[in-house]
Length: 147
Ligand SMILES: [Fe+2]
Image 1: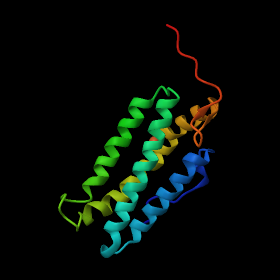
Image 2: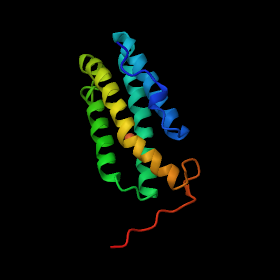
Image 3: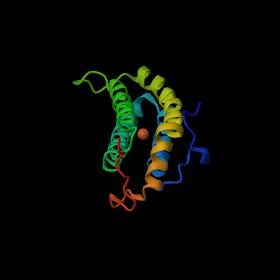
């Protein structure tokens, strides 16, 4: 079963967020059909890709004072920790393939929900504030909340 097929419904109308998500979906697809011989290599690629995707989102949230930064970044951190468990022992080159196969499906389910909730809120915030992810520039800075 395909863990996460990219669909337009997952699009957030923000290429800087949509393109990494499409790549994540493609890597999950590759992992779902991988043989034991190449599953671990694909999982490592997926972790590296996801680290970059989450790091960029975390940075954008901080740069734009996004109100839900804390809960969103904690989710990123926890998911990456769980994904790394698939690599197995630090000194092992074999990984935990049964765990990776289970996580491949679960990550697809989790990401679809994350994309449609937390990422969608972030994309809306970035568009409203006129933030250019490529340049790291705000064209409409968020005004501080006055108590
Ligand atoms: Fe996110």
